[in-house]
Length: 304
Image (cartoon, helix red, strand yellow):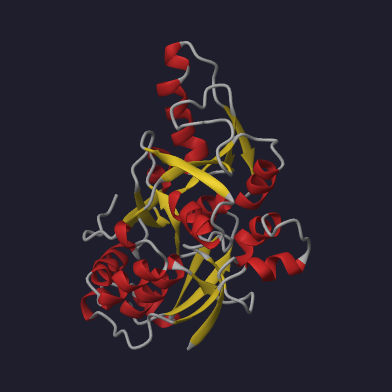
């Protein structure tokens, strides 16, 4: 099945509109967009008998898994040109895991900060949404590694304030609601580079999504954005010169990204086996390369 990719995606539509040389509206997005064609990477992948054997009978009988994702974050999770088909690394991984388990897959578009409560409440079977392990998440989730990501800081195009990751004290830096950047990385960076040295604290500006952050960065209402390295790299690749990536933030959390299930889920053993099987396939590395994330490959689907 071929899927036409709107490479700007919903998550980059605002960025492209803002950087299309002063033009406005849908024409701006069309001028800035780049498209390519990709295929459903799970086609032809066969179930892993050892993983299937670990599935609860009730799940086998149901024949379907539900996965929660916020479908607005290229290149890991976004929508194709039809505005309904989920594409990116996370949908690829989810489809591959479902195939390894011999099950169908249902995508549920979910705001990032509601995914963990939804899993804990049994509304979804799992999530693959570029979520890193934290102490709080591990209290309510089983989490299984599948690639290496992390966060970086971006400033306005050309970096007019001459900022670095180490010189953000007193600046207004956007983070997205419920993200690792908001909960761990920015507080850790603040402590390491600012407050412990008697400098003014970084002012965290919490916003609902990256689109709002990009709008505010462009209009100079904020000084920078702390966000997923993968998404910032993809955005910069699609629209060179639209902002400046200052560098990675290497404090506050691991760079490893994990699939999440409800703590103690009967699905967890089967998922870990299936995900390990996925990491050993050529399709796994193919997906990472497709979305510009080849350096994030790992070999061990480690649980918790």
